[in-house]
Image 1: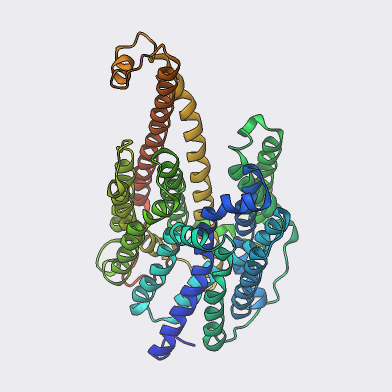
Image 2 (image 1 turned 135 degrees about the vertical axis):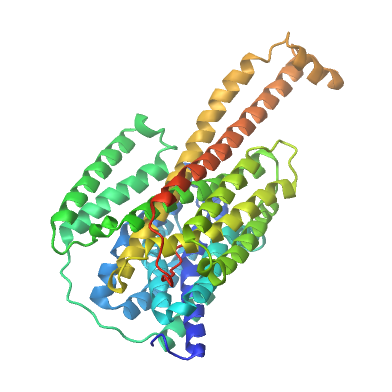
Length: 507
């Protein structure tokens, strides 16, 4: 297949790679909703159940930087077909799991196969179209890979509520079957290279990134540095990362080419996309618990909150990829997208306990518009000077940065909420006494007094609710500030040349 291939083949490739990408990005969020049901089914504690998510993310983050290396060694076609088959097989095994240990093991393997899907899908689609049509192709690609993870909680809630938690894994099968059929029929064979395996670099990479991901995922539940396990994992991560850095820069055939970061745009765009991922996915991570635990929303309705966000993201992605990216400086578009992401978080940070559905949904729609404006322009900037031969490897690194950013965001918001709740409860509690005029006025319509047992219980419950609300609002505002702080980095990026190549890197 060449860029001049007939339009029908181009459309087939678009559908095939979008389906392949959806497999990975949808699975990353759809399982979260089913986690309490899986926990109940296996009689696991909350701490144990988080390994169902952690195992997938850790293995994916370790394997993803190896995309370029493995693709050169076994061939792009063979690798993506194997990845789709392996991912689907492990999805079936996850759905058939009979214990916590088995589902964690199968999720570990599923993450290894899934790590290749996004980078390879992007590279294949990138090569399939002439330069003047890549924006349109990437707009359709982005529609799938941006909307899918946003709507994941909604789909997961419906499947879990009306069927079974096992369906969140089985739903991958028809998508994988169609992707496999189309890829096998349309994707040509490609040449392989006899690349030497850098075992030392591979081991250091696994230690550095794997231990860091473990710290991010388990830090809050184990109280961070007060845990000996977290201390050891953090030290191992630092030593592994330093060793990998030294080895990678000195080796002639490194498993991951760190010299890619010598390109100014690529390095800066990795920083921006990491900050964007923290701000965006940190907010998405705590929104369901915010509305379910504090505002008493049912699971299904909390999932519906993500629909406006998904629609806005899809429209924004199509408009940006097909129209705006060829008419405006991508630095301006990305900056506007970051601004909208910040505004969406600030809107959530101004809510109260009486917030209705649309007061919660509109901020998501604003952030969704920002998603589309960020992903395509950032890819134009990041890959503007990256050669075709290094696209697989660069794409893998770019996605690792995004994944680590989202992991940092999820860890940060979890810590901020818990620590904020403790502080706010203490501060508010000091001001609520039996002699407080505000407390007396609050209980008077109920015929109670602050010094009564029932009145004291009601006041204590309200203090907890208000303290938790302040914690969440503070987190949303912090995420908004972080989004704003990344915008100045765009000023240091070089403007792309006319007709720059486009590749969407989303989650």
